Amino acid sequence: MAHPEEQQEPRTPRDWTDEHVARWQPVLPGLDPVVEGAVTRMKKLSVHLRRVREQSLVDFDLERHEFDTLHKLAGRGGSAAPSELAQDLDLAPASVSGRLDALEKRGFVRRTQSTTDRRRVVVELTASGRETWLGAMDVLGHEEYRLLGVLSTEERGLLNDMLRRVMVEAEAGGPTQSWHA
Image (cartoon, rainbow, N blue to C red):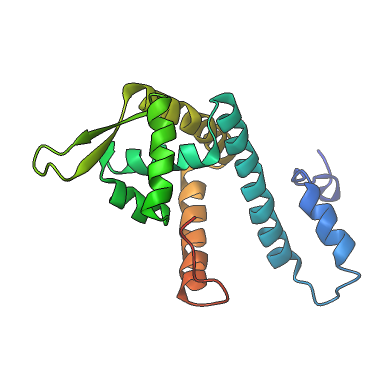
């Protein structure tokens, strides 16, 4: 039978942030290692997911602005007025028109006249546009599931709830008010 002092809990693997916090603690004695660790990990995770997204755009031969436009259009059920897309993308209507021209040439969207108002144009996601958008989305989705798959269902729910509380506080006030990236 092993002695109690010989029984040890399995060690949690260390990551880059553990070394970062250890390096800065002697320099900044008031540094809270838990806060610094959490914030640094969130930043690094965000950078990692951004890199995965950018690589998926390369893999699907999409520019970031093209993906964003397809994404907003898909988010409106695959059909929207150019003015709605301009609002969703926070762009001038002329900028959206240029984007739509390029996407239409690639066969990702089509513009048609509204059946109810001939003055109105409707932008529709084509099958090719939807397939390309979904393919780029799937790459990121798989990585998100891979990363969060190390947590149980309950832990994912708890993490989501905790991050919501942090975001509610961030959105309530502070130096930056623009959260819709």
